Amino acid sequence: MATQDDSSTSEQRTAEARAAFLASLNSVGSQGDAELQARVKDIQASSAAIAKQEAEVAKQTDLLAKQTAQYQQIADESRGKLKEIGDVQNWAEMIERDLLVLEETMRIADEENAQAAGDNGKPKPRRRWF
Image (cartoon, rainbow, N blue to C red; front, top):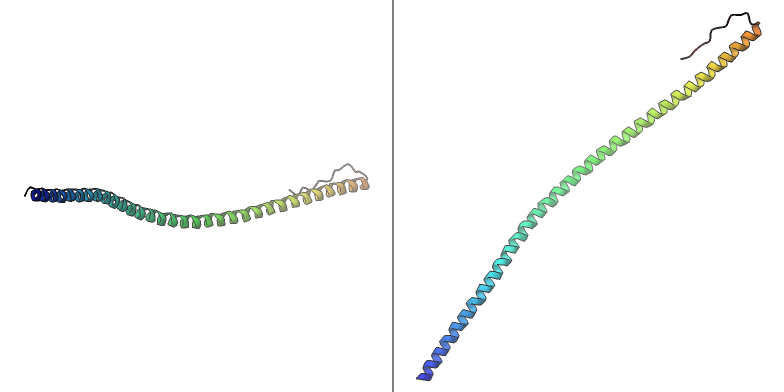
């Protein structure tokens, strides 16, 4: 009977050891599983936040593109107006040169007329155009 008691005690110890071992494995597995589940939740939360940020960046990029197009249009219009101002300035300078040439021509002509008339002592008035 001693062998039977030893055998049943041994089986009982084996069963207890197996139960303790399985409980230990479950505990370790539960801890690892809990850590993994926490990580998965963090990743999912981060993924949602990243998706929201990505949508916001896309929206802001579109707004920036529209604003850049408006600034480009303003720059193009300003460039055209500056060119027109430059053209007007050039035109005014050309007219001024022409008037100076005319004035000089009139002065020379007046002097030649005065010399041809015999220099009667009266200077003729000079014409000024501006």
